Length: 220
Image (cartoon, rainbow, N blue to C red; front, side):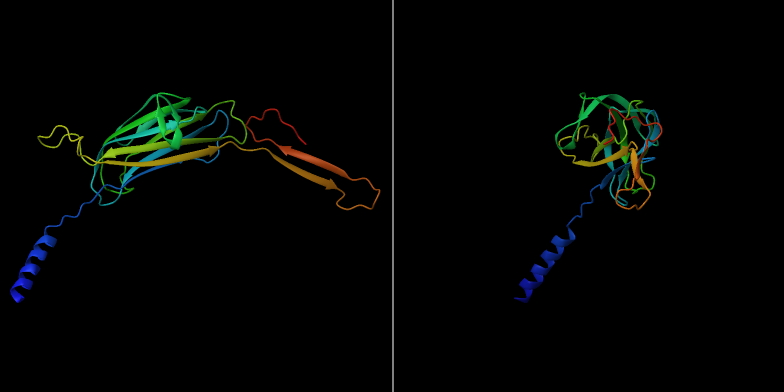
């Protein structure tokens, strides 16, 4: 019995010693706007950052798609790594999935060969200018949705020139929303107190923010 127990322990030890711990990429995509509020014909700066968790293995052939709403025109694309470009139209479909090639939005594609596991430090970033249309109405909101997709292996590894049948997929999403200012209204009465039968005066004061459009306004 002791020999059998010892043998089992040796076999179990060998099995445990042969176990391999797999480390996967940890993709994260963040998108921010320089200001939460915008003005008609005004500009803002958008920043995208494509991260991979600290001490994680790299992922490869990353593609970021950013669907910019029709009310905002992107320009001045600048990336610390990879190749950003405007490639056409886009729309947001069912499940908030970006649909390239159709719809009123403008599609930005940002390709990045490799994203290493450095966390936020040293992660690739893309910045661009967004110009709001001149007819933008007060209280409107504009949301950009962005998607990141990459792979756990390069397409070619050594003599294997096509790893597409065995490399895994990693993904992340993010969005940023900006808003046009809203009008405000203030109602006052003078005097603040009066006897029955006396006359009081009500005053309504509206404030319309600069560089903001309002249409078919009704005060009631």
